[in-house]
Length: 182
Image (cartoon, rainbow, N blue to C red; front, side):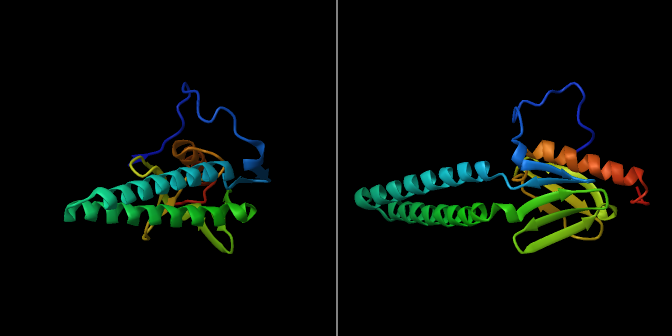
């Protein structure tokens, strides 16, 4: 994992070239990043293709397989195909009510709303913002609690840019004295 510091000044962001206006909004001191529906639909399509490939390879291995090992691989491919379809179905449910899923980055706290479930963390509880480059997620290290893992599916931002925005808000909160231990 790599800790995030201030964004490099000489680096120009190449992805995405321009953020869609509907994925980000500013509400006073709060920046709202809404669910990236286009990204989720693309991911869902990839999962469906992966399921079809898994089902096809499973059928082929069951048809031509003569050994127990081949049938075990066929069963594994069938299992993974089902897993891909279940995860694709969950993503479809997310995109159905996308307006109810957003991340609010504000001065007093950080709030994630996913439908009826909401989570808030004061910046004073956040020790560090990191990017887990193996899993491509943003990790918020919290004081005396388990880390908060944020998937980069808000605002159309890749993990590094999301982490940079969160780190900038954390820095502003510390500068305003909301985090006395920093």
